[in-house]
Image (tube, rainbow, N blue to C red; front, top):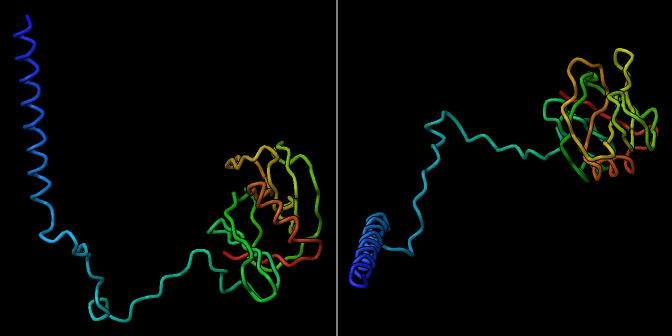
Length: 186
């Protein structure tokens, strides 16, 4: 019995050595001649090939150019993003949000009311509510769910709560007092 198990182990060892040798061969066949050489990259199309100078890449976190000046909250409907902008036009904070089912039209608004903690129109306990518009008899404003959730709103209900994470809600609450400018862009 000892002889057959040693033959079995020898067979397994031979198979393992063969597998390692095969993998080593494949790796060496695909390795560059000089491993210290920089990897090849695909060249970007020249400006002649594209018909002009390359287009600058937009910083996805940059404050939208058409959002006014001065201290303001900027809400981009299409990007589902908010920027808190200081007097110099620099974003002090930016974060993504979950839009409500009722949207304000692009334009400039002012914060009209605030509530520390209430029940949202969707029945969720919310905090740091900053209201700035009314559309179709629905108050529209920023808020954070106390449970931290960011669910997609029920499309069959008219809701105006633009939801954000609790930490972002805290920042909004501190930044946007009554009368603060809110600019909505498409």
